[in-house]
Image (cartoon, rainbow, N blue to C red; front, side, top):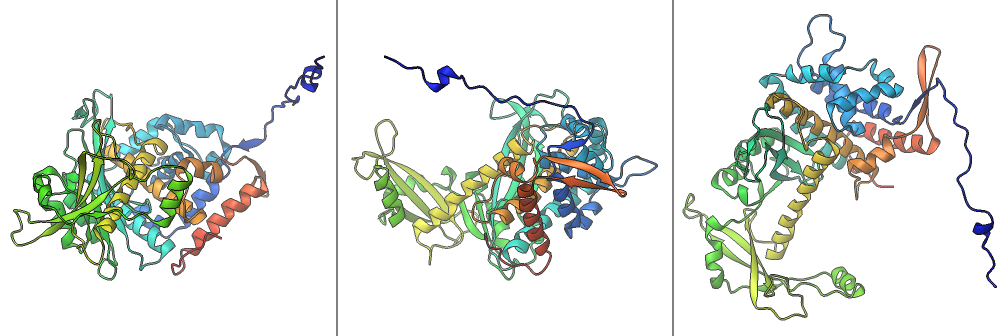
Length: 463
């Protein structure tokens, strides 16, 4: 005989809650206020204000007021300028900034920027990235700069620079420089048909000119095959950078692979071997070799090209250590950091980490609204992109302070620091924000760590 379960006797249902409307000022972004305070209290804020166009007449909003509205939108996670008006439903932001502007006002503000302001913002981005990095990790830290470009699909018929590209779509193109910790140092917005490495050498020079410790500390550079050219290599080496770029076919290295005889098997770590064994997986069979390459533009100068060789199956799949292969797949990396004392494998491992830059570009597109741009003017869109990256740098600093070993990306960081419930109470001539204790302690702890970096930089523990 089947007896009914307790859920059949008493079906589960959500508990009844009585919902009551209130005139109290409630917010879902109580953490945004402390973040605005931390940004405006930092030494860089004075320099940031100097990058903004002056507001003349009796305008309701100052230049830094409008800039903070835009930055707050990026920190909060808005997807477009129109979303800024949602702050009107959030009293903590409106009361903190002393008023909110419409999206039309913000659009007009972006068009106020002239070329000189764009140049100042670009230089500020370099100094911001460097100061944040060295204040958190120390001035003797070695920085690796990664360079790459990305495509932004656009549909605006009247937008400047929107053309058909090699991606068979219309849009804009941007060139970026990030470091290995995720800080942005420069961004150039260009017509969509622009070649990836155009002006890349100028960007290398402008970034390195504003890196104060480049004579005392060895810094590094990485780029993909588009940046394997005379201009980029000369620019990087002229500023003392060492690094690697993906070798393209025009160097002729692929036709000389048959002459390479110094192949060595890839050495896996004990942890990698143990992990593969625990998952019952076979490690890929990889060989590493190298050749010397003499470019036509530098007779007598030789660069090592390190080659990764992987056996493939007939359908192009990769052979494991337990398989039997026929053909091979090759990948080459040109090194201008020398070959010794590093091994060829260490050169490849160093270069492979540049793939992390794609995560930072993706972060900008998805979490800072840089997948598309809002204005017709390419200069105004450039300003919009630079402000987004300034906001990104600040959130990245907070993420590293909160969790140095594995910093959160913006989506998770917003949940932990910004999207905090709160209640705004006014009394004695000022406002009080009441928020849950655990959120308050975490936000304040990160803010205190940030304030500590204004003192002589030191390495912060994750404790």
